Image 1 (cartoon, each protein chain N blue to C red):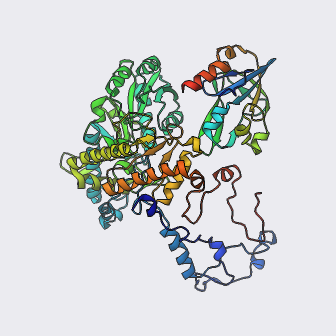
Image 2 (spheres, rainbow over the protein chains, first blue to last red):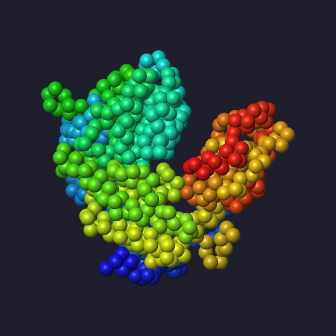
Image 3 (cartoon, one colour):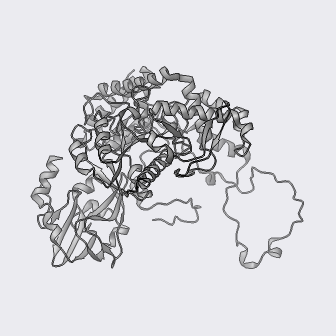
Length: 500
Length: 128
């Protein structure tokens, strides 16, 4: 069976009507009890100007139809539990179900953050150990669990960097970011009152060290770098970068988005990082997507410990656990209560389930999977950089002479029930593939077969790709008009759309 | 690729600058528009505001990306291309003509001398 045979049957899934289109006057899914307040006609108790002239056009649907509508929609959800999801840069790995069992334990999910410490020893012990695990994985002195997203971790990190320089009586307004940086890095700097300067990459995708040397000076607060980078390359010059920065009194910040490639293999603290954040929802497998929920613990080197946010979870000399108040140099709280606890519980469960050896295997297999796919696809798509790659890689569909773009390729993948990869970033027209460690050899092979089949289609039947996906309830959507003239409201048939 | 007009100057970030007296018209090149693909929104400063030299003056959005617009010259904005609000696709279809963005009255046109001419800009594109 070749990959084309595996495309799901076209047209089997009918389009789902909007709930408004299922409406029939008089049907309802609710039955309200009589109120114990005497009823009165609205006109008698409200001023005339507050009375609507007609009822709002809410859908009227019976309970069973309502349940079926949302159940059908729920079955169309695409997730890592249903299909392969090789979305580069965001580590859509499998979220083990044992994590969910842990977080749903009554002793954890029914806690209240204002309970006294004596009643919270279990969760405090869990948080303390999570903190220590992350410190060990980072190779850094101390971590805070408060930040509740990756970008929140970045902000916490840059606030710590600012506090450090301020304490030394220095004003350092500039932060360097490589040209492959995540967009959140310069945004974080702007939020924290710093401006960014971009460091160029060389043709090999690694940081241009001459450009770095030229741009580091006494006004440089730090460099924010993702390593392995967003093009999936580990930059072995990282220790030298740290030395160049430290010689000028600047710090090195690691965006931990790509920690999935280096767990247990190398530690940021060992290659000169002063402060970093983890995206535990990516690397340590908690369900995320559509913006949340996440957690972004921040780890720092010894010289930055006084500036960490507080309160901090600690183990007392008597073996009990509790909260320590922040010291005078702390940047203070960055989150109400103690962080995104449910994500941190899953993080703990994941780390404990795998252990140190298991975490190292995670990264080894994630890297092996990415390089395996790159080897299978290199003759069909252009690799702008030279293998070996880390846990992800970018490749460029070169079918422009056939009028086929990366968008066409990505949309066609939907017909193979595979989630499209990240497109056109950080290199124009590329696809970013991150298979993660979780996929079987069979799934990786199926994906490669699909990509090769699409590459053939791009040359032989390019027009088909322009309409892809071909097997879904809706085919190619007009994203340009949707962006230029958004029409966000359903309009009854007798009320024409407000947009032309 | 000999479609780059020779009457103007080019920045490394793919803006073009067309001087006429003390007015400089600013837009982005065809190459930039092609890279961005279908442009959906152009955010430009108001007439009467000032554009600083060597800094961003606005943003351009496409279905693919959002990018800053950069000016080599500083001055007062005397005209913006209001048609782009309704038809940002003009930047795709006629980037060097009807897709222009700003007209700025400059006090100091010297920074233009440091930009590329059409030949140098095309050489840069060929090298990329």
